[in-house]
Amino acid sequence: MSFASDLLARGWAKTCNSSSKGWHSLKHKGPGQVQFWIIALFIGIAAGAGAVLFRLGIEMLQGAIYGATDEELASAAADLPWLLLLIVPVMGGLVVGIILHLFTPDGRSRSLAHVIEGAAIRDGRVDNRSGLASTLASLITLSTGGSTGREGPVVHLGAVISSYVSRLIHADGVTARDLMGCAAAAAVSASFNAPIAGALFAMEVILRHFAIHAFAPIVIASVAGTVVSRTQMGNVTEFMLPEANVLQFYVELPAFMILGLICGLVAAIMMKSIFAAEDFGNFVQDKTRMPGWLRPAVAGLVLGLIAILFPHIIGVGYETTSRALTGNLLLWEVVVFAAVKVLAVAVTIAGRMGGGVFSPSLMVGALTGLAFGLIATTIVPEFSGAVGLYALAGMGAVAASVLGAPISTTLIVFELTGDWQTGLAVMVAVSLATALSTRLVDKSFFLTQAERRGVHLAAGPQEYVLATISVGRLMRPRGAENSASDLEANALMEQGVMLRRTDTLEGALPLFERLKSNFVPVVEDLEDGGQELLGAVYHIDALKAYNRALAAIAKEEHS
Image 1 (cartoon, rainbow, N blue to C red):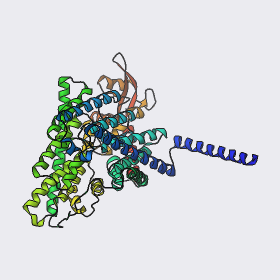
Image 2 (cartoon, one colour):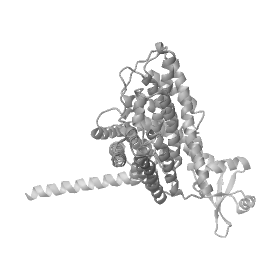
Image 3 (spheres, helix red, strand yellow):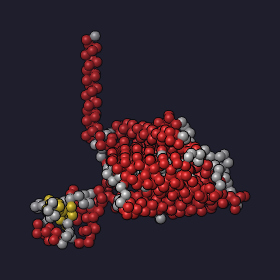
Image 4 (cartoon, rainbow, N blue to C red):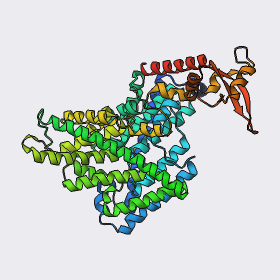
C-alpha cells in the first residue's frame, strides 16, 4: 500500500510539474501548433455558445415584450397596441444609451468594423470592456424594436473572447489574428448554421487573406461553433424555399446580370443612407446640444413611429425575408417594405443603438430580388423560373455588396436555404453587384465605416500599416552620435516642424516628402506650452521600418 501511494504521489507531482511547465511555456513563448489547435477548438466552442446565448436572449426578451419571436414578430406586432410599438423602442434606446455612456469612452456601440480594425492594426485585439457593453446594448436593441442584425454583435463578442485569450497567453500579432479569425468563424457558423461560409467569412472579411497556416484552426473553430449551435437549435436551414425554384438556364441568365447591377446600386444606396443619417444625427446633436446617452432614445422614438405603420421593421426581419423568398408578397408591398427597412436601419445605426447590417441586407436584398422577379416574370413568363429564385439571388447580391464578401456570402445563401441547384444565378448576381458597389463606396460598409473614422483599411496594408509604427520606436535619442545636433533640430522646431513621440509614420512620411529633409525633431509638450527636444527620427529609419512591416505582412499572408 505504501509503495502504491508513493508511486501515485510521484505521478501526480510529475503531472503537476509538466502542467506548470506547459502553462509557463504557453504564457511566455506562445502556443505550439497542437496547443494552438486546441485553443482554437475551445475558442470556437466559446464563440458558438456566445452566439447561441445571444440569440436565445433576444428570443426571451422579445417573447416577454412582444409575445413573439422574430420568426413571427412582424405578424404579431400588427395586432399589438400602437402605444406599445411606440414606447418599447424608446425605453430600449434609453437603456442602451446609458450602458454605452457608462462603459464606452465615446458612447458608441462597437461593430464588425472594429473587429476588422483590431485584426489589421491592433495585433488581433479589441477592447473587452467596450465590446461587452456593445454586445449587451445590441441585445437590448434587437429585443426592443431595433431594426438591425445580430451577426455583427456576435462576431464582436467572439473577438472579445479571442482578445481575452490572446492577452492571457501573450500571443503575438499573427497568433492573435488567427485566434480572432477562429472566433469570427465560429460566431458566423453558429448564427447561420453555415460552417463552410463561417470559415471563409473569417478569412475573407476579418483577416482579409487566405493564409494556409490559418485555415486548419479556423475550420476547427467553425465546425465547433456549428456543433454548439446544432446541439441547441437543431440541424435546420434558416429559410425554407418552395420546391419549384427552377432556373431556365442560359435564357434567363441576362436577367440575373441586370438584377446584380440593380442590387449593387440598392446596396450602395442603403450604405450611403446610413452614413447620411449618421451625419444628420451628428448635426442635430451638435445643434441641440443633446447628451449622447439620449440619442438612442430619440432614434427609438422615430423607430416606434415607423413601426406603428410598418411593424415588419421590428427586429432582425427573418419573417419578412422568408415571405420574400417564397414570393408571398405583392409588388407594392415589396417596394414599400424595402424602402422603409432601409430607413429603419439607417435610423437605428445612426442613433447609435447597436446591431449589425448583415440580416437587414439579406432582407432588403430578398425584397429587391422579388420586386425584380415579379416584374420580369410578368413581362416574359415563358422564359422565367420561380420568382423566389430572384429573391434568393437578390438576397445574396445585396448582402455580398454590403459586406464586401462575395465568396462567403454566396456560400451563406446556399447554406441558409439548403438549395445548391441555383448557384449559377446567385453567383452571377453577386459578382456584378459587388463589382458595381465597390466603386460607389470604399469596398464595403465596414471599410467605409473605418475610413470615416480615419482608419485607412480599404487601401490595403501599404496604407494602414503606417498607423501601426510610432515615431517613438524609431527615434534616435538626443545626444546620440548618430542623431541630429540640437542646433539643427532647433532650427526646424522654430519653423514649426516637429513630431511627437506618439505620432505615427502615417503623418511622418508625408512630412519627409514635403520638407525634403532627412530627419524631423521629436519633441514632448510641456505644461508651460513649450516643447522639450527628445531626439530625431530619420527618413531612412522610417522607410526601413515600413519595409519590414510590409514584408512581415506578406510573409503572414503567404505562409
